[in-house]
Length: 114
Ligand code: 5GP
Ligand code: ZN
Image: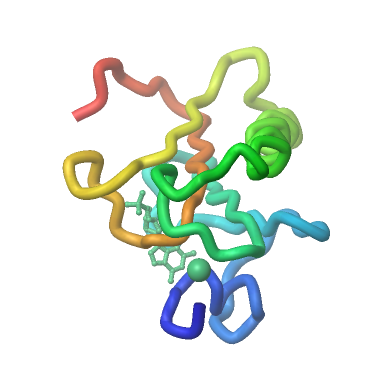
């Protein structure tokens, strides 16, 4: 999608600190990190929100979640723990409408979230 920030990052048109990429996914550091590790994992293909996922996207979402675990492990957070978050729409504070999985770790993360 031409006016989508994360599509532009996927295309390399806007710079980001990329931590992983493959055929389906790109992962990069959040520009406004909320924890020592704060990575966003996005599909290369534009999907606006969780509400727009289809059954045919199940494998893609599985790849995103398993990549989150791999990135947390690379950062040394597997044992202490980390958090994965998909925000969906206004009440959850979604601000970029290209699905992204937040991966946060490196500090104690309170629950419930704000
Ligand atoms: P949301 O609020 O939609 O769940 O998360 C969007 C995230 O994207 C926020 O954590 C925000 O800091 C991050 N973000 C917004 N603009 C940029 C950008 O230009 N580059 C990067 N790397 N992250 C961004
Ligand atoms: Zn997009």
